[in-house]
Length: 213
Image (tube, rainbow, N blue to C red; front, side, top):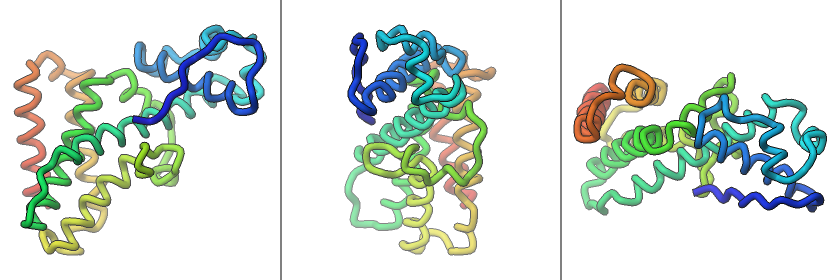
């Protein structure tokens, strides 16, 4: 997972340390209560500095939230990569590529279920695809969630599992499907399903995505 520094209460920080401490506090608050819980004053209290000290690094609460959301996206990527790492090594390159795509979807939905506060925060700030490849949103392996789904689709093309024509913008469709299910699980009418029912629904959705490609 991304390295989030533990917060230490002190009055002075080396250059950059205070920013990291504030972001770390914001990530902890987001994990506990989602984006609405990220408050500059509380972040500075946890860091042991005055509220004014935060404004050397963040112009306002929104700026802090943007930084926290970027970390949350990196943590999403880390969860996806952990799922990919569990896939067996196969000689069948096409099936390996299909498994890679499924692992991306499974890891994405798993992160939403395991860390709903961080998942909500990851998508709480308005942005467009210009940031989808930004290193600030990457996990410890250097890839963002958007890049990871793209990598899986590229693997499907390179192994001949799908045609280049079918690949065009396919990440938008695959992403929309798994994101929609994840939101229904944590904030919608599907949140009452059992863990087993959610697992089954995720598997069937990924079957549909694969067939749709």
